[in-house]
Length: 607
Image (cartoon, rainbow, N blue to C red):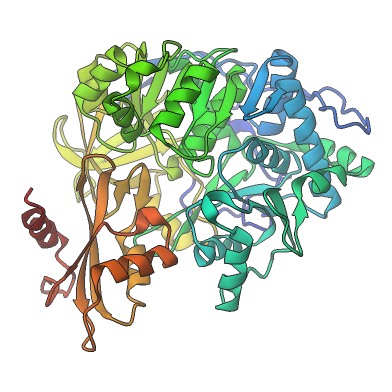
């Protein structure tokens, strides 16, 4: 399999800078020989029923060895398409009457999922969406999110998920950067009015010049917006026909999503995501979890996150499992839902499982249906893995590693791995993925020695949206993605992420980049300088600690500064601790010595 190019792609591009459908190749998801694309004639029905165009990819049994000679044997189901329009149609044909989504009183089968997807796609086309146009999705986990996303892909659009914890100016930045033409959003989630937030941001100069229409999935419909129900019912006959044509032309190599991830520069970067890479990787993920039709997955991981869209929606559609959207984690509500919905599969960060294990009222709930769990994004104690099996009843508990730049997945444990291995590693490379661990000079280090993790293969992004310079810094000329994560690889190829080359820390499963937080905090009139680090937290893994050098005028009070930060940024980015200091420790190049700050934080916290 060829490596992703590190240089700028010279093929014809669409509005988002990705290869156009006419220039795209479908061969990346399997070897060029033996790849087939079979399409039945497209129906021209004017109804909202799905057009059953099935894309068939032939993946032979393959043995992929890593540098230590170990291997994964992978037989990928040759009936699984490499794109979402065909995947939804396949699910309708294969699992038609099986429940696809249950969200409160709303329940729909896979056949109905395909019908609603078709109607949404037709409405998007009727509203002027062109292939390659960006569609923002700023909403919590809900059935409407799934329909809007699948409808966007069927219409040839590009999904731009927006973090539900973002405030107006943060959302405006990513939507403007992606040149979103339409926004699906909600009003009233956790007391937020996203429409009003965007209006307030626009008044401060944070505009979205490309945005033409806002559709409200749930909640009141402010002036100038349209309800989702009214939007979908406006679909036209020609819209259905054109959406069906676009669906038939879809490939796994199209630009499907732009997922924004913050960076050390302090500005979010748009990672370009291909559907085929998601479907291929998370089909193996579904295999490791032993997912099957009739399974019921409770999805607490937010859909806007790779763990939610890639790791939850995708395997459920692949395997015919029911998606149970859950917008906010609260331990009693989750246990009640596991009991009432007979949940079998539960993905999530360690904090979720630790909260369940430690909950005093756990024995009041019947959670005997739980069978498979996957976790990651933070360290997990061996005791927690054991408790997940013994107290929560999971037969399978595995960990995995991925990042947005690897389409959410690069390594995974096997179902039969012992608790010690699951807790101490993030698994080994997926079939078709290569790993290296290198020193600062780019030389491979021996097994058991720390170094930076490099990843190469189909899972690696083609790059960052409109940012060839950052792309070239991250993906080298040989196609290796430099993750910035420090890890140790054992003789069997299992990796243990031990540190981060960059300063990023993970708060409750959310990546936090200190540079981004520092840039915002520097706008406060009482702050002269600020440096943010991550410090350990028993429940969330890590939380932020801000060291503040006050401005000459006055020193900020911690509570007031915390309240100000909550107005400016997503709550998971707001530091837990605020400490005023006379000066920040600097090296000879005047760079902040964050190692010194970590030592100071440990002293203050009594660690």
